[in-house]
Amino acid sequence: MGEKILTKTERQLAERQQAVAGDPGRARVIATARAFKQTWLELARELARVQSQQLWRGWGFDDFDAYCRRELHLRTATVAKLLGSYRFLETAAPRVLSRSQHASQAQLGNIPSLATVAFVAKATEHGAADRQTLQQMHVEAFDEGVEAPLLSRRYKEVAFPVEATDKDAAATRVLANAARRLASLLAVHPGVPHDLAARLERSIGELLGVIESN
Image (tube, rainbow, N blue to C red):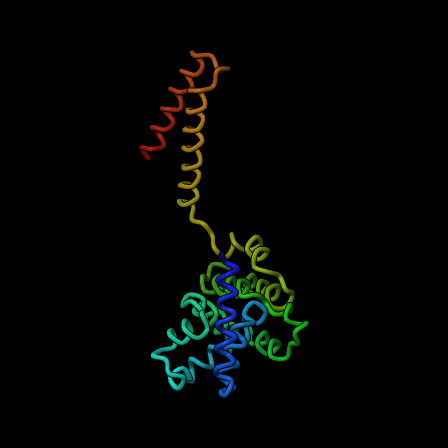
């Protein structure tokens, strides 16, 4: 089903691009939307231009969101992520924007993915990591090509530290689930002597009582 939806959207975009071919600026935005996966940064740049210059007004749309949804088939959340990541690069790593403008099709792999930029932006805005850590994260993401999954493994605990109370609550849930699972297994396992199973079940009941009372 997903493939059919994508094919239908691509066809609609292609038809729309042809229909507005007389307006090169408008057609260019649609072209970048069609190549979204390869050129997300170029699409974000075009969206920022359309938004800042309010070009959608001259194209007959009530607002910017309606333009993105109806002409480009982009969800509001997707547009917000694109523009948010682009604005972040404008202030935090303008070298990436400059590099992307001169990149050939073969060099698009040197442009950080949307997920990578979003992770670094979120970590920067969260403010938990120290300046040196953030600088290193920026270098790895924007100059060395480290992708979001690896960045997350390296920096998640530093950039998004979990409060001690949250860790305790999570550990308690794991313990309670394990205790309930053990109790259910004892009830059906034929190899456990009845008196041993009874003692264990009483102990599990006491453990759950302590856990649930806190």
